[in-house]
Image (tube, rainbow, N blue to C red):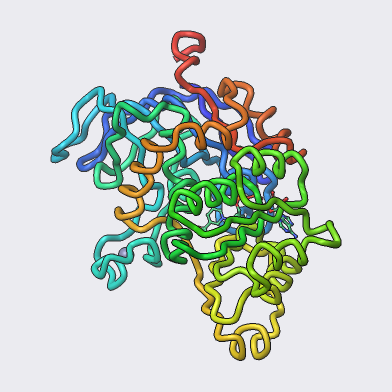
Length: 352
Ligand code: NAD
Ligand code: ZN
């Protein structure tokens, strides 16, 4: 089978032909992958930054956002049949720790991640625990269904920050920020502004019909956001850039009492004037990781069923899986929204 793997501890990813997988173990299912999204995490592993060099053991098949059909079922699995179309939560939590047992499996410290710590979904087949599967309803197209995971990140952030009737600023218009903007609108935000320096991505944000799209390089961007937010600044900030300067500027701009949700991962420690910008302003900082299992999944399913046009605007490229290198080049250039790899078209075209 065709896989996309990290075979060397250096920048890049390589196509690898592997034997088809054996029968799944007890509690596991085999999924024939139809489509898989390229995530920022995959890009980190492709670039071989300090985080991935410290975490990923080569050789490793990567990829964790996917949809596919069940092709084999291990002993003891109930509720799933061969042929079912499924996606899966990529965080495999331990299920027994205090966090898992109190409904907070997204912060389980023993989490193993598909495509990071164990073989991933950039492959014709992936083996996953049945407990992590999600049945995808017929009304959701494959390219959208592959994206439960990143749309779930955005959903978890928007739902945690409670945006209804609020002036919302999204900092960073990468795929997750763009999904967050679409979701914030759907959740009844009073206004949604998005800040993004990359013009290609700002253009995608404009196509979502937001109230304001600004570049941090525009000297009038602060005035434009203040004007939109009745002179007070945003009541909710959704930080999805990971950029230290942007985090500081948005904390300055946030209204007193604002909720400031952080999902973007800075490349290192960030210096903040906590006294002036957080304590004295009564700002609530929220760290956002993963997706709530499985509350977020219900929310994402409802969003995808209701908003196929918004989903379609953020997905800018669907590439044959064999053209994965082009996908990573597009991400290098920032000339894309979300990129999805098509694995279904491989069937019968490559040696098995
Ligand atoms: P991305 O890198 O594609 O998007 C980040 C965007 O921020 C880019 O479009 C970039 O141009 C923009 N940006 C840079 N400087 C900016 C500035 N000063 N102001 C506004 N925007 C600026 O990444 P993504 O896939 O959309 O993910 C967003 C972030 O979330 C990344 O940092 C990623 O590592 C992180 N992430 C976190 C989780 C989690 O569970 N917490 C999960 C997935 C991704
Ligand atoms: Zn746990």
